Length: 131
Image 1 (tube, rainbow, N blue to C red):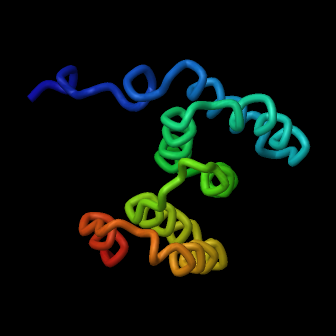
Image 2: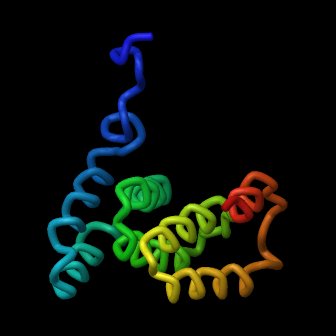
């Protein structure tokens, strides 16, 4: 089939303007810890639940490992957060492919801590077991 029939990637489809701007601001600030913290204060922590999760997914999609981990740590602190095995699986794969093995261990520790709060998620557990 024609390439024109492919769906557009994240931008414009699943990301709100606020989420898109947050991803861009994080990527611009990533070399300066103070700037990253300012972006978290001014943008990330003000996002709605859906947008915060969309930012996390987009950073994972763009292979922004350390920024994704920072956003994930903030997401975990939210009152509405419920652990999703598929998110853990995506993050573990990304960190493993970037040789951040200590981050993989950290995520596995988070997963162990939350294991009693995990819903039965066959797709997520299967993703964790894939090579």
